[in-house]
Image 1 (cartoon, one colour):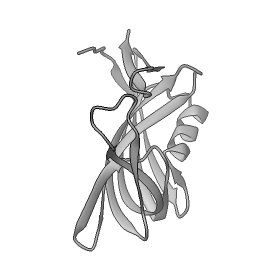
Image 2 (cartoon, one colour; image 1 turned 120 degrees about the vertical axis):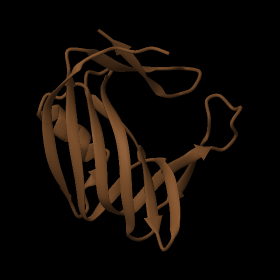
Image 3 (cartoon, rainbow, N blue to C red; image 1 turned 90 degrees about the vertical axis):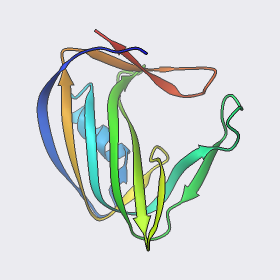
Image 4 (cartoon, rainbow, N blue to C red; image 1 turned 180 degrees about the horizontal axis):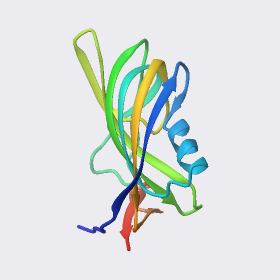
Amino acid sequence: MKWCQGQVGRVFIIRLEDGDVLPQCIERFAEENGVAAGHVVLVGGVGGGEVVVGPRRSDERPPEPMLLPIDGAHEVAGVGVIALGEDGKPYLHIHAALGRSGKTTTGCLRPGVTAWLVGEAILYEIIGTKATRIADASSGFALLQPGM
């Protein structure tokens, strides 16, 4: 385990509008407002796009992602972590549960989903620490590297 400590800085209440693309719209907001590290809580609706629902084979490196299209409006509840990438831009790693008609899909929103009608997000800025996402050749992921 790797860890670091920080404090809560600013807290932003964000309303996403119909068609806004996640996670890119939150990343853009973070960049425009100078948020280098943070925690995001998301509720509302999504209407399209794709989510990563697991690796095709658990023992394969780097893993081949399984993508599931989102067809139609779904309720969404998600949580994520923002950290700066090696390029100095904020990246949001967010997982969410998406529900429709009594069925739930859970996955990573990295490929992008669109807000349906409205989404609500709370962004808690974390200050006094450095957290970065560093490319890992084995996994193919940009892994969180906590730092002081």
